[in-house]
Image (cartoon, rainbow, N blue to C red; front, top):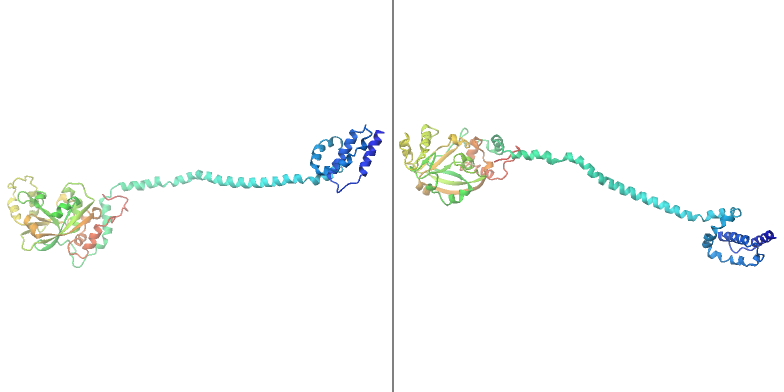
Length: 404
């Protein structure tokens, strides 16, 4: 009888009209009712329970019914519902599509970011690793020797070659000039003379020439025979050469630049003595003046009488080519005023040429006769030569050395 009652209830429930479209909730409700009928089978009044009507509210709570009862249903109803539940359960599998989409987005973004960052950082970190490749290109060690070479002073041959190139335009002779040697003007007329000096002495010299303040002895002067000697030459570049490189004659710290004073000398009617060249008298006169006794005349010298006659002149001129003058050109001509009155009335200051760079001045015979002549007063190229002498960096350091 218990079996027939449960069968009747199931049949009755199946014949009940279904409201609306069947849903998974309805199936679940049926399963729940069947399970409930199975548990309450001993009670005959179970069919009178209007529980089927209560099956209407479940559409409002389908999720809870599924969660609470679906877990218990598989224990007893697997044999009855397999045909229906699997067919509709896949329909609700869209919940499984959501994770499928999430999984599709996550991997799509993660690999897109990770490869973008890792390759961007990898080269940045590898760049310093490539720096060693630049290490061999370290120019400092390779340039160090090139910078060390200028520490060596240029040899005289290098300097001469450099200056020769700079003054090449003066090499062509002028038809009005003597081609072989330099022609030195006579001091018995009106001529232009030059005196080179250290800039530290320029101010006192500009104030005037005082023979007493000059050296007491020199090539063409000796005290007490004469009060002193003021030395000049007939070329501006020769005067600069003496001021720059005459340290062997006048010991001092070599200057880097010098000033050259330009004078006008009026020797008309003046007593002037001129040595025609490097004669015996020229050599003996210099030996006489080397006497270190400055208290009296050198009467013991065999050249004393001739020296006294020479000193009766106000100006003495002649070559300057003593062994001590090795840094001067062989063309050097010196003019020495030994009388203060002649200085005052016959010598007139014309100009002061400042800042003549010693590096621009050739040493010894690198000062050619052509350059010497261009530096004489009245030469058409005088001003051009003077400009070159005053030009900074006129001489380059292409020889990998520096000019002292």
